Image 1 (cartoon, helix red, strand yellow):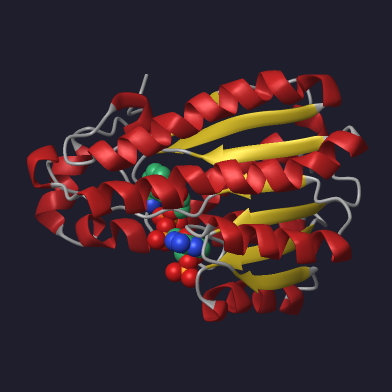
Image 2 (image 1 turned 135 degrees about the horizontal axis):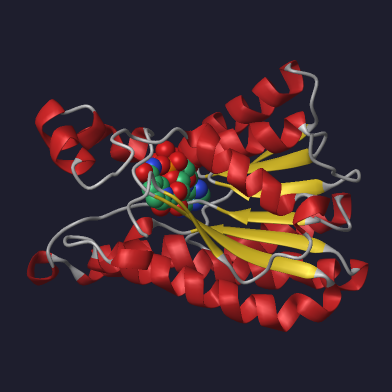
Length: 249
Ligand code: NAP
């Protein structure tokens, strides 16, 4: 059992997959969770499931690719929750393709959704955290940002950017007891990877690169993330934790 002292968390991309698992895991630890996703239906479903299980949650539909929408949502949220203690930057998309075939809009969409969103959310949510002198920020990066991956120039650049941001903010916020870490998942079974985990031939090729020879579960990423948000993880900052079946060693 981890220790959480009446904390509130905001999880982006909480409607499905890894983000939903993180939201549900934190809620089971007694954390009040603000579930953000693009569509009201998906964050609403996560918040309803948490509430039905006896937890506390609020759903909020925000397009994280829109900085002005993030600013408006944060302003409203901070009236209701003067301090959001835990921020999980998890929302992400892929628009894969080899560099010569990658359009500028595919580049920009991935950078804006995956990386620039972290800049906006962190800038707004971390300010009250600094006054409270306690906070946890976890950025969900990727093994692609650690190792690179052919066909994902935009995505691996965004994820490597999240790792650089993590290390810099860990240094900027350390004096306020705010830790900032990144989790880098490998191939996790979610809607994002359904295209290849569901195809036996592609799956077999991918699993050749995974020492543990299986796809990961969202709950396995959530467990690491929840630990990093706990009291017990207070001396860990600026680190990247690979949850990838041993891909990046
Ligand atoms: P997913 O199943 O596709 O879910 C993505 C979530 O992000 C959804 O809730 C979606 O909202 C939300 N989202 C996407 N664009 C958004 C936007 N513009 N505004 C607000 N919310 C937005 O993805 P996942 O596999 O759980 O991935 C979660 C994170 O882990 C991503 O950052 C991904 O890059 C990273 N990751 C995943 C894997 C993997 O193998 N699955 C591996 C490494 C890293 P809606 O529900 O409303 O559509």
